[in-house]
Image (cartoon, rainbow, N blue to C red; front, side):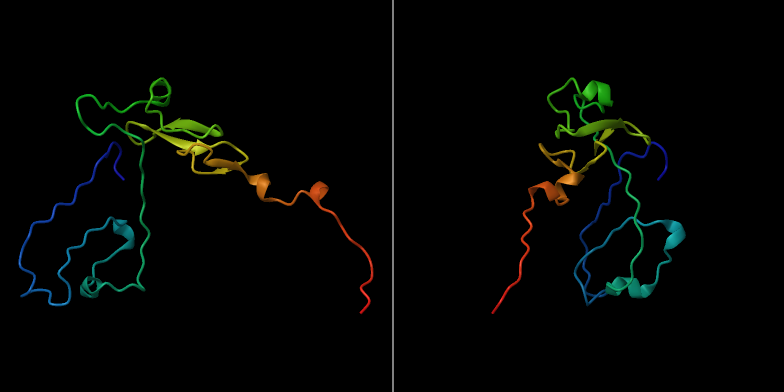
Length: 140
């Protein structure tokens, strides 16, 4: 992804597909690593067995309007629109352009953009202090 690239648009125009593609009335667009993809005519047939990696680099950014500047972590933390909502999350300034990202703190996992979205990794482990062990012999 080129440094500073913040938007990617695909624009489709309406046209008659009937003389070109009788198998599908749909248009397709996708992002793919150019070093890992070579176009084949069979791609137009939607081969669901063929895959290719896709790299996404995203950040919380303004919508592009005059009043929607992209903020750094420090700036965003002072606003009502701060996106890192989980108490167990932290903010990281974007490395490839304006904006920021949210991550769960160490020892936590989940969705840092939701209230209580980051949960402890150890909560899923069994706590042996809470278990009761029964021993004995079952006689039938």
